[in-house]
Image 1 (cartoon, helix red, strand yellow):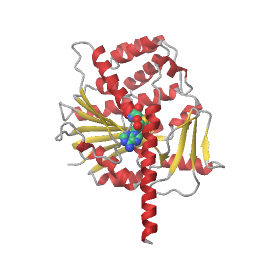
Image 2 (cartoon, protein in one colour):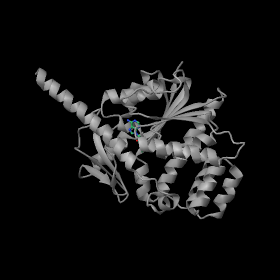
Image 3 (spheres, helix red, strand yellow):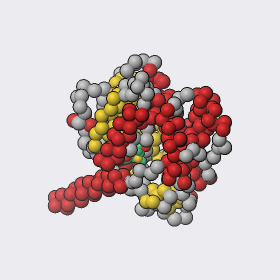
Image 4 (cartoon, helix red, strand yellow):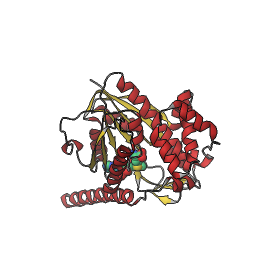
Length: 346
Ligand code: SAM
């Protein structure tokens, strides 16, 4: 019995570390495509929609934080290549810590940050930034911070948490990294696939998989959904991503209580979109982001980095360009996700 237990323990540890390696290798290998290349993709509108959603979420939260604090410090947990750097710049934050398991992504993120600083107007005050390579489901970020006293006002964890639900310990470490250094009143925000949506779609499908021409989700088996380690494969445009794990949201909410976190809201992408698009400012931002797709590479990038917040300019650009929209298949893919906002209690 003893040796059997030891054997299964070693097997489990080996599997978990293999999975972490797979995640890092997968994201390290992903090529950085130029704007022109990205715009040819069948999921260009979906990428734009996800970006819009993150922009609106981040702007809303920074707005709330600013009412209480003049200096804002942010942790971007699972920052990837720095897809949200401009959003932080637009939000006029003061300090950013970027962390990711993939060393190559962190390098590219740092490069992007340096480029952004160089390109900026001399009077532009770009935030300072630190970059950390770490498996945030196994290592403690507090051991790696340059300033051990640092506290965050916001932790943003976009499309990341589902990788940590392989085991309770990994999910807990990810949550600990996200929440333990938040100031009281600080926010933990993010996006992750909605377990209800995934399981509902799987249950009505006649196989162990569902999807369309742009995405496919494949479970190992049906009707058995453990709280941790419930693995599925997600492929986008035919490319199989690293395995992901089901995040049962009520469990996530319960686990976050350990770090004094209160759920402010959880919304599906559909609910979030329907609510936020009513605001004229957000609508124009969406039109503008769509319009940027049509620009030749240099021009689009330049516009995006210049003045994302300039409402009138955005309006003029949007008015000049015909607008694209999400295809039904793209909508089916993106409507799997949900948005969450937690607040740290005193
Ligand atoms: N947050 C970025 C965004 O919204 O563009 C990137 C999202 S990408 C889908 C998922 C990111 O999570 C990848 O960069 C991956 O390396 C990172 N990641 C996955 N597991 C992680 C872990 N255990 N620790 C740190 N980062 C992790």
